[in-house]
Length: 349
Image (cartoon, rainbow, N blue to C red; front, side, top):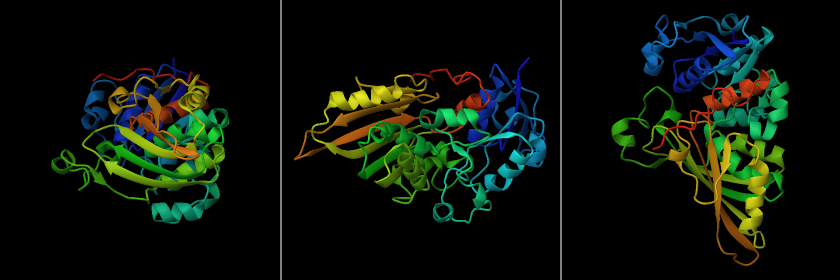
């Protein structure tokens, strides 16, 4: 018999589908309810075809706190600005929360209002959720009752830069270009995700003002890099899944490839889901469909007393950049093996 019970609140989106899929194959956690405001009464497979025949659960429209009562953990797949209204009540009901929205990642209410376009309804709760990047905050996540899972771009950028931040080698201006698949825009179609345009296009958006910017800066500061300035250009690509990020960092000229590689190896040697690759650079197809991330780098020759490093990182935006990382956080919170239901390496090609 499975030891823990989970509910998914907001289960009709792509992130919800991935959480449900991982929970249905989880050895220690039983999915007992899936809540949504649309497709109410329909079986899960009617919305997510790969789940057909895997469960008798149907989408239910129940107030989130009521739906979560009696469960051990609630995984929230709600949109930004919606999750903020429901998470506090779920926590008051005595249920652990893993939130996938951006509503509790930041500590600064002014930054939230600037980047998410609304005042936070519970500013007193900012800073009370543990930021759910296991590679940085594993011990705190294990003790937490409320975790804010990172954003997809934030996860990918942070994993590339954390070794430098931890070593005190990251400061000043960091310039980032991040390319992402259409599933990151959500299940509702829009002009930016319409296939005839997206399939033949590369398009920058939210240039220098993406909402993950303050999240990344807060995380890097907590890791040892408080003086970073971030210039981030996101680009939509003709992919369904995947993120590829290149971060350009100025380093001391005497930091060679061997020394820089040692920082990455020291950071990720024991990590179950981060691969530091030396013989090639990270690529989307190597991580798509999995909870794995890849990081690597290329160094330019020194110019004067500095040299440029291109730090490349790749994730699947829906898994390590989203629902998979939420499950990873849930496992840590419940004292389960961190890799449970997440160890599959993904397809190739």
